[in-house]
Length: 114
Image 1 (tube, rainbow, N blue to C red):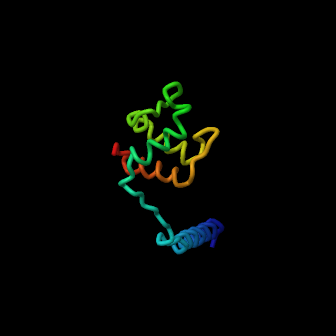
Image 2 (tube, one colour):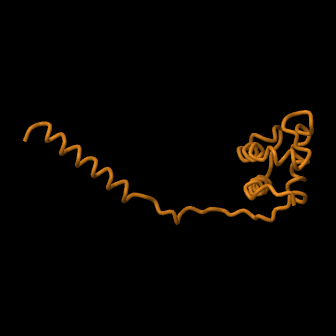
């Protein structure tokens, strides 16, 4: 057996072991918990008061994005969600985990004007 054959056989064995180990060490998806959002979160009753209390002092028309209206919030929903979830907004303040979840769920459920 020449050296190239030995290298080829060794490579085949290593690749086989690698592929087999990847296939058998996959974690079960059943351990993943996916929280579902309440699709009935009210913009008027839940989201607007959070925005008004925590965001309007900066985003009340003088600084982008303007979050005074539903349209302003909805047009910037992805930005709002990202900034809130990452806790980069509101600057100089903070939202509770419940407020963050309400905003995230409302946006991920379609950001309805309800």
